[in-house]
Image (tube, rainbow, N blue to C red; front, side, top):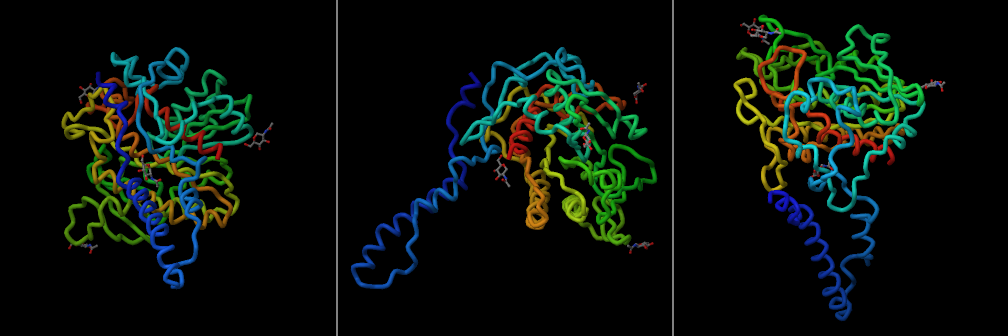
Length: 407
Ligand SMILES: *[C@@H]1O[C@H](CO)[C@@H](O)[C@H](O)[C@H]1NC(C)=O
Ligand SMILES: *[C@@H]1O[C@H](CO)[C@@H](O)[C@H](O)[C@H]1NC(C)=O
Ligand SMILES: *[C@@H]1O[C@H](CO)[C@@H](O)[C@H](O)[C@H]1NC(C)=O
Ligand SMILES: *[C@@H]1O[C@H](CO)[C@@H](O)[C@H](O)[C@H]1NC(C)=O
Protein backbone atom coordinates (compact mmCIF):
# COMPACT_ATOMS: atom_id res chain seq x y z
CA UNK A 1 0.00 0.00 0.00
CA UNK A 2 1.32 3.41 -0.89
CA UNK A 3 0.32 4.96 2.46
CA UNK A 4 2.90 2.78 4.15
CA UNK A 5 5.74 4.52 2.32
CA UNK A 6 4.70 7.79 3.84
CA UNK A 7 4.33 6.34 7.32
CA UNK A 8 7.85 4.94 7.44
CA UNK A 9 10.13 7.01 9.64
CA UNK A 10 12.08 9.45 7.53
CA UNK A 11 15.78 9.90 8.02
CA UNK A 12 16.46 13.24 9.67
CA UNK A 13 17.76 15.75 7.21
CA UNK A 14 21.45 16.62 6.96
CA UNK A 15 21.14 19.85 8.92
CA UNK A 16 19.68 18.25 12.01
CA UNK A 17 22.07 15.37 12.06
CA UNK A 18 25.05 17.69 11.66
CA UNK A 19 23.81 19.68 14.67
CA UNK A 20 23.56 16.51 16.68
CA UNK A 21 27.06 15.50 15.60
CA UNK A 22 28.36 18.91 16.60
CA UNK A 23 26.95 18.63 20.10
CA UNK A 24 28.12 15.07 20.43
CA UNK A 25 31.62 16.18 19.46
CA UNK A 26 31.49 19.14 21.83
CA UNK A 27 30.35 16.93 24.66
CA UNK A 28 33.12 14.44 23.99
CA UNK A 29 35.75 17.15 23.85
CA UNK A 30 34.58 18.67 27.13
CA UNK A 31 34.28 15.41 29.00
CA UNK A 32 37.50 13.90 27.74
CA UNK A 33 39.86 16.84 27.46
CA UNK A 34 38.84 18.97 30.44
CA UNK A 35 39.87 16.54 33.22
CA UNK A 36 42.96 15.72 31.20
CA UNK A 37 44.05 19.35 31.00
CA UNK A 38 43.08 19.84 34.62
CA UNK A 39 45.40 17.05 35.72
CA UNK A 40 48.26 18.65 33.90
CA UNK A 41 47.65 21.86 35.77
CA UNK A 42 47.10 23.81 32.59
CA UNK A 43 44.58 26.64 32.47
CA UNK A 44 41.27 25.66 30.95
CA UNK A 45 41.26 26.52 27.27
CA UNK A 46 37.75 27.97 27.50
CA UNK A 47 35.36 28.98 30.28
CA UNK A 48 33.18 26.28 31.75
CA UNK A 49 29.97 25.88 29.78
CA UNK A 50 26.86 24.17 31.01
CA UNK A 51 26.35 21.84 28.11
CA UNK A 52 22.78 20.92 28.96
CA UNK A 53 21.64 24.56 28.83
CA UNK A 54 23.37 24.96 25.47
CA UNK A 55 21.47 22.07 23.99
CA UNK A 56 18.17 23.19 25.46
CA UNK A 57 18.54 26.74 24.19
CA UNK A 58 19.04 25.41 20.66
CA UNK A 59 15.91 23.31 20.74
CA UNK A 60 13.51 24.55 23.39
CA UNK A 61 11.11 21.81 24.39
CA UNK A 62 8.01 23.94 23.78
CA UNK A 63 9.11 25.43 20.46
CA UNK A 64 8.86 23.32 17.38
CA UNK A 65 9.37 24.10 13.72
CA UNK A 66 5.85 23.30 12.56
CA UNK A 67 6.92 23.61 8.91
CA UNK A 68 9.27 20.63 9.01
CA UNK A 69 7.41 17.36 8.91
CA UNK A 70 5.43 15.17 6.55
CA UNK A 71 1.96 14.63 5.15
CA UNK A 72 0.14 11.77 6.88
CA UNK A 73 -3.14 10.08 5.99
CA UNK A 74 -6.19 11.72 7.53
CA UNK A 75 -9.13 9.48 6.63
CA UNK A 76 -11.65 11.83 8.29
CA UNK A 77 -11.19 14.11 5.29
CA UNK A 78 -11.47 17.89 5.03
CA UNK A 79 -13.04 20.50 7.29
CA UNK A 80 -15.76 21.39 4.78
CA UNK A 81 -17.38 20.47 1.50
CA UNK A 82 -19.17 22.50 -1.14
CA UNK A 83 -22.37 21.74 0.81
CA UNK A 84 -21.14 23.31 4.04
CA UNK A 85 -19.28 26.17 2.32
CA UNK A 86 -21.21 27.99 -0.38
CA UNK A 87 -18.37 30.38 -1.11
CA UNK A 88 -16.11 28.04 -3.10
CA UNK A 89 -15.63 29.72 -6.46
CA UNK A 90 -15.64 27.62 -9.62
CA UNK A 91 -11.90 28.03 -10.22
CA UNK A 92 -11.10 25.95 -7.14
CA UNK A 93 -14.22 23.79 -7.01
CA UNK A 94 -12.55 20.65 -8.29
CA UNK A 95 -15.25 18.23 -7.15
CA UNK A 96 -17.98 20.21 -8.90
CA UNK A 97 -16.06 20.02 -12.18
CA UNK A 98 -15.61 16.30 -12.10
CA UNK A 99 -12.53 15.46 -10.08
CA UNK A 100 -13.41 11.95 -8.91
CA UNK A 101 -10.46 10.99 -6.69
CA UNK A 102 -10.89 12.12 -3.10
CA UNK A 103 -7.58 11.05 -1.56
CA UNK A 104 -6.04 14.48 -2.08
CA UNK A 105 -8.41 15.85 0.61
CA UNK A 106 -7.41 13.18 3.13
CA UNK A 107 -3.95 14.20 4.28
CA UNK A 108 -2.81 16.34 7.16
CA UNK A 109 0.49 18.00 7.88
CA UNK A 110 2.38 16.41 10.76
CA UNK A 111 5.34 18.43 12.08
CA UNK A 112 8.29 16.24 13.15
CA UNK A 113 8.49 17.47 16.74
CA UNK A 114 4.92 18.37 17.67
CA UNK A 115 1.32 18.55 16.49
CA UNK A 116 -0.16 21.24 14.28
CA UNK A 117 -3.42 22.13 16.05
CA UNK A 118 -6.65 21.75 14.12
CA UNK A 119 -8.15 24.95 12.80
CA UNK A 120 -10.61 26.24 15.39
CA UNK A 121 -12.98 28.73 13.75
CA UNK A 122 -14.36 30.09 17.04
CA UNK A 123 -10.87 30.64 18.39
CA UNK A 124 -9.83 32.36 15.16
CA UNK A 125 -12.85 34.68 15.16
CA UNK A 126 -12.34 35.60 18.83
CA UNK A 127 -8.73 36.54 18.03
CA UNK A 128 -9.77 38.83 15.19
CA UNK A 129 -12.81 40.37 16.90
CA UNK A 130 -12.89 44.08 16.06
CA UNK A 131 -9.91 43.66 13.74
CA UNK A 132 -9.05 43.51 10.06
CA UNK A 133 -6.98 41.15 7.94
CA UNK A 134 -5.86 41.40 4.34
CA UNK A 135 -4.18 39.18 1.78
CA UNK A 136 -1.87 41.30 -0.37
CA UNK A 137 -0.64 39.77 -3.60
CA UNK A 138 -1.85 37.65 -6.47
CA UNK A 139 -4.54 35.04 -7.00
CA UNK A 140 -2.79 32.43 -4.88
CA UNK A 141 -3.10 34.78 -1.91
CA UNK A 142 -6.77 35.16 -2.77
CA UNK A 143 -6.97 31.36 -2.91
CA UNK A 144 -5.85 31.27 0.76
CA UNK A 145 -8.50 33.84 1.70
CA UNK A 146 -11.14 31.66 0.05
CA UNK A 147 -9.91 28.71 2.08
CA UNK A 148 -10.27 30.85 5.20
CA UNK A 149 -13.84 31.86 4.24
CA UNK A 150 -14.71 28.16 4.07
CA UNK A 151 -12.95 27.26 7.31
CA UNK A 152 -14.99 29.95 9.07
CA UNK A 153 -18.24 29.13 7.27
CA UNK A 154 -19.76 26.83 9.85
CA UNK A 155 -19.41 29.45 12.57
CA UNK A 156 -20.15 32.74 10.83
CA UNK A 157 -21.46 34.00 7.50
CA UNK A 158 -19.79 37.12 6.16
CA UNK A 159 -21.38 39.81 4.04
CA UNK A 160 -19.70 40.66 0.74
CA UNK A 161 -19.34 44.43 0.79
CA UNK A 162 -16.63 44.63 -1.88
CA UNK A 163 -18.69 47.02 -4.04
CA UNK A 164 -18.43 49.68 -1.31
CA UNK A 165 -14.68 49.78 -1.73
CA UNK A 166 -13.86 49.07 -5.34
CA UNK A 167 -15.39 48.63 -8.76
CA UNK A 168 -12.95 45.76 -9.30
CA UNK A 169 -14.67 43.38 -6.89
CA UNK A 170 -12.84 40.34 -8.21
CA UNK A 171 -9.41 41.63 -7.27
CA UNK A 172 -10.36 43.78 -4.29
CA UNK A 173 -12.70 41.77 -2.11
CA UNK A 174 -14.08 42.88 1.23
CA UNK A 175 -15.92 40.44 3.47
CA UNK A 176 -17.44 41.64 6.72
CA UNK A 177 -18.26 39.39 9.70
CA UNK A 178 -20.82 41.54 11.53
CA UNK A 179 -21.03 39.31 14.63
CA UNK A 180 -17.30 39.77 15.13
CA UNK A 181 -16.82 43.20 13.56
CA UNK A 182 -14.09 41.55 11.50
CA UNK A 183 -13.05 42.62 8.00
CA UNK A 184 -11.33 40.15 5.68
CA UNK A 185 -10.07 41.50 2.38
CA UNK A 186 -7.83 40.94 -0.62
CA UNK A 187 -5.68 43.69 -2.10
CA UNK A 188 -4.63 42.76 -5.62
CA UNK A 189 -0.97 43.37 -6.38
CA UNK A 190 0.77 40.58 -8.30
CA UNK A 191 4.10 42.48 -8.24
CA UNK A 192 3.80 44.39 -4.92
CA UNK A 193 5.48 47.30 -6.72
CA UNK A 194 4.05 49.67 -9.33
CA UNK A 195 3.65 47.91 -12.66
CA UNK A 196 2.50 48.92 -16.12
CA UNK A 197 1.78 46.87 -19.19
CA UNK A 198 4.57 47.37 -21.70
CA UNK A 199 3.89 44.89 -24.45
CA UNK A 200 3.44 46.26 -27.97
CA UNK A 201 1.12 43.29 -28.66
CA UNK A 202 -1.07 43.99 -25.66
CA UNK A 203 -1.63 42.14 -22.43
CA UNK A 204 -1.51 38.34 -22.35
CA UNK A 205 -0.43 35.56 -20.00
CA UNK A 206 3.21 36.08 -20.98
CA UNK A 207 3.32 39.75 -21.96
CA UNK A 208 5.99 42.32 -21.09
CA UNK A 209 5.60 44.49 -17.98
CA UNK A 210 7.37 47.58 -16.63
CA UNK A 211 8.15 47.24 -12.93
CA UNK A 212 9.09 50.23 -10.78
CA UNK A 213 11.03 48.29 -8.19
CA UNK A 214 11.38 51.04 -5.60
CA UNK A 215 7.73 52.15 -5.66
CA UNK A 216 5.23 50.16 -3.61
CA UNK A 217 2.00 49.59 -5.52
CA UNK A 218 -0.51 52.11 -4.19
CA UNK A 219 -3.29 49.57 -4.61
CA UNK A 220 -2.17 48.00 -1.34
CA UNK A 221 0.27 50.53 0.13
CA UNK A 222 -2.41 53.23 0.21
CA UNK A 223 -4.80 50.99 2.13
CA UNK A 224 -2.59 49.04 4.49
CA UNK A 225 -1.96 51.40 7.40
CA UNK A 226 -5.00 50.48 9.51
CA UNK A 227 -4.86 46.69 9.04
CA UNK A 228 -4.17 44.44 12.03
CA UNK A 229 -3.01 41.40 10.03
CA UNK A 230 -1.30 41.48 6.65
CA UNK A 231 -0.37 38.35 4.72
CA UNK A 232 1.95 39.14 1.80
CA UNK A 233 2.76 36.83 -1.08
CA UNK A 234 3.47 36.94 -4.79
CA UNK A 235 4.82 34.40 -7.24
CA UNK A 236 4.15 33.27 -10.76
CA UNK A 237 3.89 36.73 -12.35
CA UNK A 238 7.67 37.05 -12.01
CA UNK A 239 8.20 34.51 -14.80
CA UNK A 240 7.00 37.06 -17.37
CA UNK A 241 9.36 39.30 -19.32
CA UNK A 242 9.93 42.52 -17.35
CA UNK A 243 11.75 45.85 -17.60
CA UNK A 244 13.06 47.07 -14.26
CA UNK A 245 13.07 50.73 -13.21
CA UNK A 246 14.64 52.32 -10.16
CA UNK A 247 14.41 56.04 -9.39
CA UNK A 248 12.50 56.26 -12.64
CA UNK A 249 15.45 54.97 -14.71
CA UNK A 250 15.61 51.72 -16.62
CA UNK A 251 18.20 49.59 -14.78
CA UNK A 252 17.78 46.21 -16.45
CA UNK A 253 15.37 43.56 -17.56
CA UNK A 254 14.38 39.94 -17.54
CA UNK A 255 13.69 38.19 -20.88
CA UNK A 256 13.77 41.40 -22.90
CA UNK A 257 14.99 41.33 -26.51
CA UNK A 258 17.33 44.37 -26.36
CA UNK A 259 21.04 43.58 -26.31
CA UNK A 260 22.06 46.83 -24.61
CA UNK A 261 19.91 46.39 -21.50
CA UNK A 262 21.49 44.47 -18.63
CA UNK A 263 19.84 41.16 -17.91
CA UNK A 264 19.17 41.13 -14.18
CA UNK A 265 17.12 37.96 -13.98
CA UNK A 266 13.75 37.25 -12.40
CA UNK A 267 15.07 36.85 -8.86
CA UNK A 268 16.38 40.39 -8.88
CA UNK A 269 12.93 41.84 -9.45
CA UNK A 270 11.38 39.45 -6.95
CA UNK A 271 13.88 40.35 -4.24
CA UNK A 272 13.51 44.09 -4.80
CA UNK A 273 9.71 43.86 -4.75
CA UNK A 274 9.82 42.34 -1.26
CA UNK A 275 12.49 44.77 -0.11
CA UNK A 276 10.25 47.66 -1.17
CA UNK A 277 7.16 46.10 0.38
CA UNK A 278 8.80 45.54 3.79
CA UNK A 279 10.43 49.00 3.70
CA UNK A 280 7.02 50.53 2.99
CA UNK A 281 5.45 48.82 6.01
CA UNK A 282 8.36 49.87 8.24
CA UNK A 283 8.08 53.48 7.10
CA UNK A 284 4.34 53.79 7.65
CA UNK A 285 4.19 55.63 10.98
CA UNK A 286 0.83 54.36 12.15
CA UNK A 287 1.10 50.80 10.84
CA UNK A 288 0.78 48.48 13.84
CA UNK A 289 -0.21 45.27 12.10
CA UNK A 290 1.26 41.80 12.30
CA UNK A 291 2.85 40.93 8.95
CA UNK A 292 3.27 37.44 7.54
CA UNK A 293 5.25 36.48 4.48
CA UNK A 294 3.59 33.44 2.91
CA UNK A 295 6.46 31.95 0.95
CA UNK A 296 6.60 31.10 -2.75
CA UNK A 297 4.10 28.51 -3.95
CA UNK A 298 5.76 26.47 -6.70
CA UNK A 299 3.71 25.27 -9.66
CA UNK A 300 3.58 21.56 -10.49
CA UNK A 301 3.36 21.48 -14.27
CA UNK A 302 4.80 18.35 -15.79
CA UNK A 303 5.52 19.56 -19.30
CA UNK A 304 5.39 23.20 -20.43
CA UNK A 305 2.53 25.11 -18.83
CA UNK A 306 1.41 26.57 -22.18
CA UNK A 307 1.95 23.40 -24.22
CA UNK A 308 -0.35 20.97 -22.49
CA UNK A 309 1.68 20.57 -19.28
CA UNK A 310 -0.47 19.11 -16.53
CA UNK A 311 -0.59 17.95 -12.90
CA UNK A 312 -2.43 14.64 -12.75
CA UNK A 313 -0.90 13.02 -9.69
CA UNK A 314 -3.31 11.88 -7.01
CA UNK A 315 -0.80 11.28 -4.19
CA UNK A 316 1.67 13.50 -2.32
CA UNK A 317 5.39 13.11 -2.79
CA UNK A 318 7.46 12.03 0.17
CA UNK A 319 10.41 14.20 1.18
CA UNK A 320 12.82 11.80 -0.53
CA UNK A 321 10.79 11.57 -3.75
CA UNK A 322 11.47 14.90 -5.27
CA UNK A 323 13.48 17.90 -4.17
CA UNK A 324 12.23 21.41 -4.76
CA UNK A 325 13.84 22.55 -7.99
CA UNK A 326 16.59 25.13 -7.80
CA UNK A 327 14.67 27.82 -9.68
CA UNK A 328 11.82 27.59 -7.17
CA UNK A 329 14.23 27.50 -4.23
CA UNK A 330 15.77 30.79 -5.37
CA UNK A 331 12.45 32.64 -5.22
CA UNK A 332 11.96 31.31 -1.70
CA UNK A 333 15.48 32.26 -0.60
CA UNK A 334 15.29 35.79 -2.02
CA UNK A 335 12.06 36.65 -0.22
CA UNK A 336 13.05 35.00 3.07
CA UNK A 337 16.38 36.86 3.06
CA UNK A 338 14.53 40.13 2.55
CA UNK A 339 12.16 39.31 5.41
CA UNK A 340 15.09 38.49 7.68
CA UNK A 341 16.84 41.72 6.69
CA UNK A 342 13.71 43.70 7.63
CA UNK A 343 13.05 41.81 10.88
CA UNK A 344 15.51 43.63 13.11
CA UNK A 345 14.13 47.05 12.25
CA UNK A 346 10.62 45.64 12.67
CA UNK A 347 11.49 44.50 16.20
CA UNK A 348 12.81 47.95 17.04
CA UNK A 349 9.55 49.41 15.76
CA UNK A 350 7.64 46.89 17.91
CA UNK A 351 6.30 45.13 14.80
CA UNK A 352 6.05 41.40 14.19
CA UNK A 353 7.19 40.06 10.81
CA UNK A 354 6.42 36.34 10.68
CA UNK A 355 7.07 33.54 8.24
CA UNK A 356 4.37 31.29 6.78
CA UNK A 357 6.97 28.90 5.48
CA UNK A 358 4.87 26.78 3.14
CA UNK A 359 7.13 26.42 0.08
CA UNK A 360 8.70 23.06 0.87
CA UNK A 361 5.67 21.39 2.34
CA UNK A 362 3.42 22.39 -0.57
CA UNK A 363 6.03 21.17 -3.01
CA UNK A 364 5.08 17.71 -1.70
CA UNK A 365 1.48 18.21 -2.91
CA UNK A 366 1.44 17.94 -6.72
CA UNK A 367 -1.98 16.33 -6.21
CA UNK A 368 -3.60 19.48 -4.82
CA UNK A 369 -4.16 21.53 -7.99
CA UNK A 370 -7.32 21.93 -10.10
CA UNK A 371 -5.62 20.80 -13.35
CA UNK A 372 -8.66 20.91 -15.69
CA UNK A 373 -11.15 20.41 -12.82
CA UNK A 374 -11.79 24.06 -12.22
CA UNK A 375 -13.63 26.59 -14.28
CA UNK A 376 -11.80 29.83 -14.83
CA UNK A 377 -13.55 33.09 -15.58
CA UNK A 378 -11.03 33.56 -18.34
CA UNK A 379 -11.19 31.49 -21.49
CA UNK A 380 -8.00 29.56 -20.97
CA UNK A 381 -6.96 26.30 -22.50
CA UNK A 382 -4.08 25.64 -20.10
CA UNK A 383 -4.33 23.41 -17.05
CA UNK A 384 -4.17 25.00 -13.61
CA UNK A 385 -1.21 23.61 -11.69
CA UNK A 386 -0.73 26.86 -9.74
CA UNK A 387 -3.86 27.37 -7.64
CA UNK A 388 -5.22 24.84 -5.16
CA UNK A 389 -8.48 22.93 -4.99
CA UNK A 390 -10.88 23.74 -2.15
CA UNK A 391 -11.01 21.87 0.07
CA UNK A 392 -7.42 20.72 -0.23
CA UNK A 393 -3.87 21.09 1.04
CA UNK A 394 -4.06 24.90 0.98
CA UNK A 395 -6.37 24.69 4.03
CA UNK A 396 -3.22 23.91 6.02
CA UNK A 397 -1.98 27.46 5.36
CA UNK A 398 -4.71 28.75 7.63
CA UNK A 399 -3.92 26.15 10.28
CA UNK A 400 -0.38 27.60 10.24
CA UNK A 401 -1.73 31.14 10.20
CA UNK A 402 -3.84 30.60 13.32
CA UNK A 403 -0.94 28.80 15.00
CA UNK A 404 1.34 31.80 14.36
CA UNK A 405 -1.31 34.34 15.36
CA UNK A 406 -1.59 32.65 18.75
CA UNK A 407 2.15 33.37 19.09
C1 LIG B 1 11.09 26.34 6.11
O1 LIG B 1 10.63 25.01 6.18
C2 LIG B 1 11.53 24.06 5.64
C3 LIG B 1 10.89 22.68 5.73
O2 LIG B 1 9.56 22.67 5.29
C4 LIG B 1 12.83 24.11 6.38
O3 LIG B 1 13.75 23.23 5.79
C5 LIG B 1 13.39 25.54 6.37
O4 LIG B 1 14.55 25.60 7.15
C6 LIG B 1 12.37 26.50 6.90
N1 LIG B 1 12.87 27.86 6.75
C7 LIG B 1 13.00 28.72 7.76
C8 LIG B 1 13.57 30.06 7.43
O5 LIG B 1 12.67 28.44 8.90
C1 LIG C 1 -15.26 47.64 14.69
O1 LIG C 1 -13.86 47.55 14.43
C2 LIG C 1 -13.28 48.75 14.00
C3 LIG C 1 -11.83 48.46 13.70
O2 LIG C 1 -11.69 47.43 12.77
C4 LIG C 1 -13.44 49.82 15.06
O3 LIG C 1 -12.90 51.04 14.60
C5 LIG C 1 -14.91 50.00 15.43
O4 LIG C 1 -15.03 50.88 16.51
C6 LIG C 1 -15.53 48.65 15.78
N1 LIG C 1 -16.96 48.81 15.97
C7 LIG C 1 -17.61 48.33 17.02
C8 LIG C 1 -19.08 48.55 17.02
O5 LIG C 1 -17.04 47.74 17.93
C1 LIG D 1 19.72 50.65 -26.68
O1 LIG D 1 19.93 50.86 -28.04
C2 LIG D 1 18.86 51.52 -28.69
C3 LIG D 1 19.13 51.54 -30.20
O2 LIG D 1 20.48 51.67 -30.46
C4 LIG D 1 18.70 52.91 -28.13
O3 LIG D 1 17.61 53.60 -28.75
C5 LIG D 1 18.44 52.81 -26.64
O4 LIG D 1 18.36 54.08 -26.04
C6 LIG D 1 19.50 51.98 -25.97
N1 LIG D 1 19.07 51.74 -24.59
C7 LIG D 1 19.90 51.82 -23.58
C8 LIG D 1 19.32 51.53 -22.22
O5 LIG D 1 21.08 52.11 -23.69
C1 LIG E 1 -12.73 30.36 -26.04
O1 LIG E 1 -11.70 30.37 -27.03
C2 LIG E 1 -11.98 29.53 -28.14
C3 LIG E 1 -10.73 29.49 -29.05
O2 LIG E 1 -9.83 30.52 -28.74
C4 LIG E 1 -13.23 30.02 -28.86
O3 LIG E 1 -13.52 29.18 -29.97
C5 LIG E 1 -14.40 30.02 -27.88
O4 LIG E 1 -15.54 30.57 -28.50
C6 LIG E 1 -14.06 30.83 -26.64
N1 LIG E 1 -15.13 30.67 -25.64
C7 LIG E 1 -15.62 31.67 -24.91
C8 LIG E 1 -16.69 31.33 -23.94
O5 LIG E 1 -15.21 32.83 -25.02
